[in-house]
Image 1 (tube, rainbow, N blue to C red):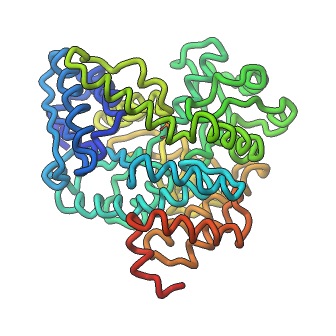
Image 2: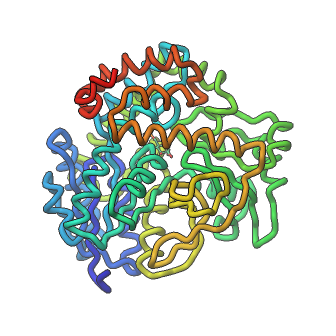
Amino acid sequence: MKEKGLKIVTIGGGSSYTPELMEGFIKRYHELPVEEIWLVDIEEGKEKLEIVGSLARRMVEKARLPIKVHLTLNRKEALKDADFVTTQIRVGLLEARAKDERIPMKFGLIGQETNGAGGFFKALRTIPVILEICEEMETLCPDAWLINFTNPAGMITEAALRHSRIHKVVGLCNVPIGMEMGAAKLLGVDASRLRIDFAGLNHLVYGLDVFVDGISVKERLLSLLTESIDTVTMKNIHAMGWEPAFLKALDLFPCPYHTYYYKTKDMLEKDWEASKNVGTRAEVVKSLENSLFELYKDPDLSDKPPELEQRGGAYYSDAACRLIHSIYTDKRDIQPVNTKNNGAIMGIPADSAVEVSCVITRDGPKPFAVGELPIAVQGLVQTIKSFERVTIDAAISGDYNKALLALTINPLIGSDRLAKQILDEMLEVHKAFLPKFFKNRSNL
Ligand code: G6P
């Protein structure tokens, strides 16, 4: 890696989140000397890329930094000699997400971007595209790090780790950092004094213990959590309180996405109500995005507007920049990321991705040895990992039967009959983004 002048490539650069990332790089410029940022998008995202790219340039200008912002639809041109490649893509755009959310609900099931049937279809659409990016990286920037934010981040990261020849792959999510910020707020301490030992999977991660100045405060945090329902949640998830006795017995700090598993019926009701009133999350985000892009067009705007905080990805630039910074400087601090398990969590395959506290070195994340997860949650984590592995196989092979198997074993579906109905309907609506399935139709 170069000592100076880093080249960062952001695939999906036309995203409304890009100002968040720009702000992160600008804030850290003096520790992380970024020379070039290449924002890459596809033809359908061209207009958004130009709007958000111009804002990115105004932000850099305002900060008086010598960072060159390049906008391109040519991914290969951008990838050449990159140092870090970040991915924030949405194959099929928000329209596909809205279908992932609405269709399962028709069958009385959770429709969510990263969990259950919705997460499954997002994985099927995205994995082949990520593997294509990895293949291009192999030749164009073999030494670069791939930092994946694309959802479902756990499965996408695992697909890249197991099915590409790129080894420098890390998956990143804002959920752990959101939990840290939320816990610090609840406990009334500065986040720098807090440490959480994280272990689990992406969007299924637990805080095994929580420390302030090295002393465990987990018990206190769990009791505070039952009193304050919305401090540790994300904008895209309905805030609902936990039963105090449940949390006490669980004795772990759950992540906001656990509500889909431990409050399935309540979440379904809330999502159903929302879909009839304000729309599904994708539909809400669509109108949020339209107003964000209207703001971004303003030539006098040269900062990240506060309205962006209405999206679920709060703190994501902090997570991304602190990770890139620690890899670049070999900082050896502790951060929760998605990486190869390598025996850290017993009972999860060594080559699978897990979300776990790691020491971040120049050579990548080194996970802490967790051992076995507490028995009350081990089964769920293993079940979801089985689902993820079968889903990845299905996405790569385009095998209908494997897809049906993956959906059926997901606890949010739990019926082969319903799984088949959903699969048939959703394969059809997402056909344009699932070429592997339609080549292999003889599998049926
Ligand atoms: C959370 C998740 C992200 C997800 C985001 C969605 O922050 O951790 O993985 O992308 O929510 O937010 P949105 O505003 O798109 O619903």
